[in-house]
Amino acid sequence: MNRIPGYEFFGKQLKEIDRSFENRHKPIMLPDASHPDEIALRLAPIAVEAAQLLRSMENALIERRIKDDGSPTTAADLAAERLILRRLDEAWPGVPVVAEETASTTHTDEFFFLVDPLDGTRDFIHGTGEYSVNIALIRGNRPLAAAVAAPAMGSVWIAGTTARRSTMLGEGSHFDWHDIKVRSAPAEGLVALVSRRHGDVATEACLSILSIGTRRMTSSALKFCLIASGEADVYVRCGATMEWDTAAGDHILCCAGGSVVGPGSVPLTYGHEDRGYRNGPFAALGDASLSSKLDLPTAAA
Image 1 (cartoon, rainbow, N blue to C red):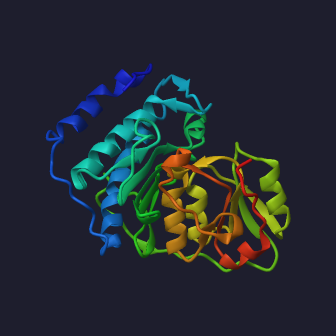
Image 2 (tube, rainbow, N blue to C red):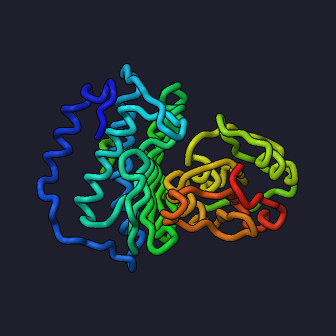
């Protein structure tokens, strides 16, 4: 891993994580697909631990660099990813992990994880608090279980077959889970969640067809989770995104009764190594009936 300025500051924490798993040649342990809710419950403390690490790093003087795709990365992204990779290896050794910072070209298998250790790096840098940790287990080409933790909001969402939300309590080992559900779309005055930094003409064209009453700026995968919690109705994105940006939020929203669809109202699929794990345009909807009113472009803007 290439070190970047500021990374050594967190060396002590990371060395403790490294010491927690010493045997890298453990037998492969596949997740039990018959119990997705149990998998989600095991993902929750991993996501929360990474979120708490990020929270502790918010006020540190961390330099950043720009990656080849033009997006920023920081020591915090790398530290959170390193933690998550180790925790997943402890729980399910041998299952591939496709992660944004250090494992974005990993080959997939029947089961694999998609991880964004810090979704909303620009917001992390600017101190808005609108960032999250996203972890999704994929089976085939669709999510099976997922967790999204938002430390600044003090919330974590999970889904296996049921979507749930909890506050982040203590060190992340105790939760107060309650089921969440999307709301029916109102006839007028839909609440649309829009990206703070990623507007585009195609997205605006799609939204203009709907009866939007309120536009609420929200960053990262929080948009999926807020729709899943019944706090908003629609999120359209026609610009480029990656599979680790959407998989966890997609699953949580779908388990809460919503949908995430691409052109032609087809659900998103995952594991597209041939296109570098890049998504096309999509709409995240609390009320699936809204999909018939949208005309998504076939290629990302």
